[in-house]
Length: 482
Image: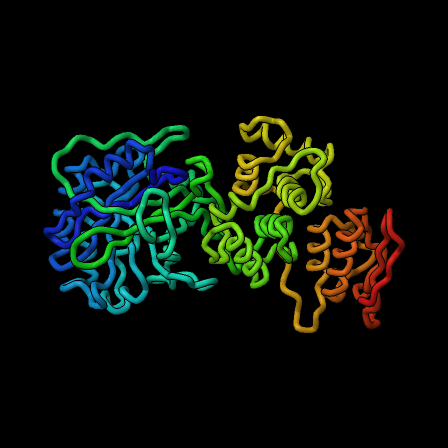
């Protein structure tokens, strides 16, 4: 069943002025019965925009879609080239006519699936018709290169691979990410908190299509929550299936943030700690760079996942570990980094003691979870998706000379659970390898408490930075060249 872990689906309904996908009505009804948010899409082809809209609206209504019922997402127009050529007669005016009629019928702004190439060549750069439409854009295997903006506007849904797999669908599927929260996605589908999608209204005849997708993820400024879609069906041209959200092993409403090259923040730090707990060599610095991507790919390969280096729902579900009183190591640090982000004054030291348990239980109570102080999958999901009250500033990469700023050094040390005095000394200009050596010392000591007692003094003197010193409660004082 496609429903396993998924929460929405876009399904191809029509193309041009005459084609109806023969699977649409049955698939649309089935999606609603399964509790999926759903909407049809139209593949724009030859014919006037108004005539194509009329054909699309008739077909969708016959299948019980009007864009207003709980669980129904906005309708979609798919604007892309057909075998490398622009659809006959397409221009900004015709697209505007299609969108105006569809908006009038559904009461919401339709979503536009398109690309900068289509906008530049087929619409000749005039995209004013799309001004009120959320953009859904493709760009495959692009790493940090997200879809180029269309008319100065960026994507709301990003189709970032066409080689995914979805339970219940044969062959490869398109994988997408929605930039927003599950609450925002549900609002688009007219769903109140706790409400589930209703079945389609009655209607005869229809065509259909395919394309499965899932939930939406949260994240500050980044795309969040991965999902899948097929794009579908018969007819001249290709469809553009879509979705965003969860994995088959998670609850159907669970969503996860999407982490990829360029992402920064506490969720990246958390993922880095979890990768380290899984045996990967990665520094928990809050920056998703090449080393983190390589570690993620290695983890994905070893767990039978697509090694795309993007941490989405499937990877989060494999990556998280249950931690509780008595647990220790990087997975505990990951949980502590999250809990600290909610204002809890706890050390990120990798030791799950009473303070961590109390913080976990308090978080669970405030988020409607069983307050047992055990951090399992549901608690992990709530932690990474919530709004942090204390968001650590991500560090910057070390400069070419290998030295760190004060903030870079302090952030890396704090992520490793190492204290450094602030105000009495300075770590500005400390060598990156010195900080990594201190972190390695803590790991090698089995988690002993380490405190920085000296620094480079570059913040207090005009002399050349010299050295940093550490002290440990269970290891001798170590001095290292800064």
